[in-house]
Amino acid sequence: MSADMYLKDSPDGSPCKWTKTTILDAVKQLLNEQNTLFDDMGKKLSDSKELDSMIRLILFNGKKIPYSPDEHAINLGTMFGYLKNEDGLVAVSNRIFETRLYNRCLSENITENKLADTASLGRNQFITGGILNMDLIMEKFMIHFTDIYGDSESSLLEEHGRNQLSMVREITILRPVPGICGGQM
View 1 (cartoon, rainbow, N blue to C red):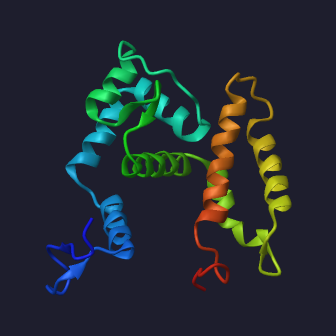
View 2 (cartoon, rainbow, N blue to C red):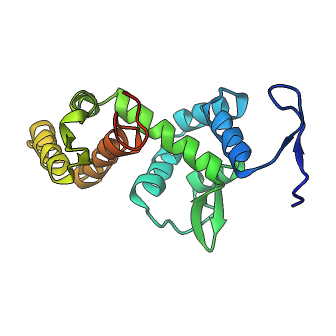
View 3 (tube, helix red, strand yellow):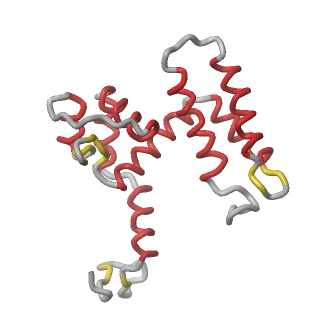
């Protein structure tokens, strides 16, 4: 790739070189915009719970699923361009789709989940002396999880727990925390 590659349209109309920063900015903009590709992706996943479930297993559980084009969900995901065959295993087609799908799943889980609400409200309690207290995070997670799902006899309890912990991690670690790692106060 030539160092003299330019963006066709920069915000102020002047030529702008492709740099790591401008590429990352373009990816952020793409991931945050509403467009027909992502609209269709959401509709297709809503229509095919089997495909949606498979993508969640891959993203949140790291499940290794053998690629078989005869399997309905794999065939659909491949046909739509969301999935691909990577060394004999099903994988999300590209990092942009992976990030968009991951964000979609997290957003859905957070909006449907009271554990996420509790985590959002109390996230500053996890900071002690400017340091994130992981022991306290795990302790609170176990308390809330037991309160909500303690009586459940579901065989999917462990998988659900992993999803919940992913949301807690997203809320408490990945988003900027005021006063830490560039978080705004």
